[in-house]
Length: 297
Image: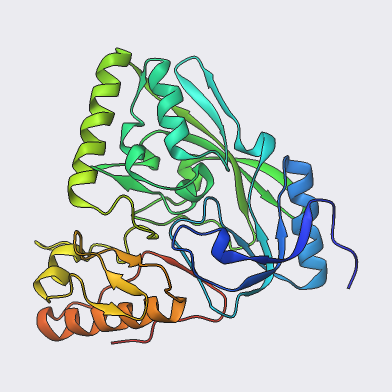
């Protein structure tokens, strides 16, 4: 195997890179700071036949206990920039959504408040068309910069195939930047709405526990996944060091010693009960990394 490009390190523990705090090591971890460095890492991974994953802040991610035998990327430097410009902003794919909410709100730009409830980065939010409180990235996105092994390209939002928690981006493509368009409003009013959303989230979801966010997508119909799982009596149900949150049944917490296998066991039990009691097959929202799978109920 050829030597990796600058910015790539071997044997990085994924448990330190994820919000749930489980998982084994990545064979390689790349920390690109610009599009050229990112493209070089992608080209190297392609030439060496390495699998690829982008982890952002490590939220919405469950790595296998055996780790990931490939290249994991986390965007830093210029690829995590936040630049407010006119009635919008140019954002690096690695920028934290919470930081973007603060910056655009301070600038008197409204329309991004919903993202205060999403613990991730801009790139991940574009890839999965993340949303909360009735809004989603597709509502404000103008275009994205998408980088592959051959370099970057600008893709307008309409060509990304954005739908509920989905985009048409290929597995080997990385969102390194995004352009959003917002509307002018009083910064005090914006901060008030953000505070109300954060208070609502704090009241309904675990805030201090280690989680990866929502476990399952809402299936449609009258009940959310959380309501279905609560009705199944899963709040507080534990396997090993993992438990279903006593506060919200669509969250799994690492109580301190959880493995990814513990989390998977809870997800399998949750899907089984949802199907048996409600006839609903829940689809997981969390992204799986490495040799890990959720068996059918």
